[in-house]
Amino acid sequence: MRSYFMMLLMLASTTSWAQTDSSKINQLRVGLDFMTHGEICGGGMPRTDHKTLEVEDQSRFILGRTRINMDYQRSGLQVHAVIQNKAIWGANGNQSLNLYEGWAKITAKNGLFAQLGRVALSYDDERIIGPNDFAVANKTHDVARVGYEGHGHKAHVILAYNQNNENVYNGTYYVNGAQPYKTMQTVWYHYDVPNFPLGASLLFMNMGLQAGTNDTKEWDYKTNSARTVYQQMYGGYVNYHPKHLKLEGSYYRQAGKLVTPSLTAAKIDAWMASVKAVVSPTDKYGFTVGYDYLSGDDFVPDLYGGRFGMINHEVYRGFAPLYGSNKKFYGIMDYFYESAYVHSFTPGLQNVFIGPYYKPNAKFACQAMYHYMAVATKVSNLDRTLGHCIDLQVSYQFSKDIVLAAGYTQMMGTETMKRLKQDDSSQQARWGWFSLVITPNLFTTKW
Image (tube, rainbow, N blue to C red; front, side, top):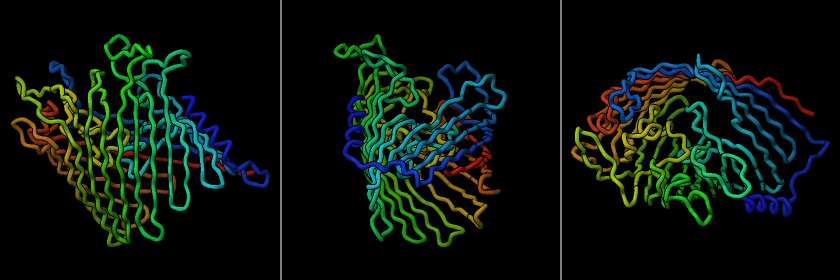
C-alpha cells in the first residue's frame, strides 16, 4: 500500500499541477437523482439445494433509490461525492444509506492526472469493468488512479487495496467486501486514430483474492494471514464507427488462480470473444446483430435423479465477466452471470442476438432483441441449446431531467435450461419492469 502512495507523491513532485487562480471560476453543483424501479417476475427464480422449500413462482416489488450529487470544480481540481439510499418500498428500517462515490481528482495542464477515492469505473463497452446501472445499486471501487489523456492517447493505472477495518500489524482476512478482491492492479490504454473512425484499447488486470478461512489449509503461515491467490485478465477492444455503421469486437483471457465457492484455490484458463454490428441507415431506425462466446467447464456427470454434480477440475475454464455491466450483453434477464447455475456449474455461453430499434424523435425510443442461447461446452446427454429470449424495451424522455423506461422479457427455455437450473419454471420465464428516473439540478453557483 505504501508503494501506491509513493508513486502518487513522486508524480506530484515531478509534475507542474494546475494551481488555484483567483481569476479562475470555482463552480459548485448540487443535484438529486430519484429512481423508482418496479419488477414483476414469473418463473426463473433461483432455487436452493433444499428441494423441500417452496419457492414462489412470482415475485413483485418496487424499489426506490435516492442520490444527492455534489460536484466542485476549479482549475486543476475536481471533487465529487454521491450519497445514496436504496430500499424496497415497505422495508423496515433504513440500512442502505452509503457513500456511492467520493473522490478527488487533480489534473495537470499537460494531461496528467491523479484521482483518489470511491469511483464508479467504466471502460470501453463496460463488458469487463462497468457500473452496471440496471442493478440500481451499481458497482464502485476504492482506488488510486493515475494517468495521462491527450492527443488521442489515454493511459490509466488503477490500484486498490481492500480491508474490512484498520489493522496495524497484518492485513485482515478479506472476502465479503464491497468488491471481492483484496488487491487489484489494472493498466488500461486507449488510442483514437486521428481523422479516422477507429479506436482500440488494451486492458490488463491483476487481482489478489483470499482463499480459505482463518482456520483452513489456505492459511499462509509465513505472513500469518489468509493466503492471497492472483488472477489475471488481459485482452482488448476495438471500435470502428464510420457513418451509418458501428462495429465492435473484444477478446479477453483469464489466467492464474480462481477462488472456488468452497474458498479453495484452483487454476483457471478461460477466454471470451465477441463481435457486434449496429447498422443505422438513418438517425431514426436501424438494427443490431452480434455474437458472444464465453468458455465453460465440461464433463459434468449426470448424477442420480437427473441432478448435475460439479466435479473438481485441475483447470477451470469457465469465463467470469468480473465487474462488467452484464445485462447489456447477455439479455436483460441475464440468467447466466447475475444468477448462477445449480452447484455453481459454469458451462459457458453462446449468445447470438439480432434486433431492430426505432427512434422517431429525440424523446421516444424502442428496441426489440432476439437472443439464441446455448452452452459453450458439451453437457452429458443434453442438447447445448438453453433457449430463446426476446427483450422489448421502450423509453420516453418527458424533459431533460425526467425519463420513463419499461421493458418485457420472455424466456423460452429448453430441457437443458431446466436441468441446469434445477427449476421447471426456467423453461417459461417472463419479466416485466419499469424505471422512472428524475434528475433535477438543484443549483449551480460560480465565484
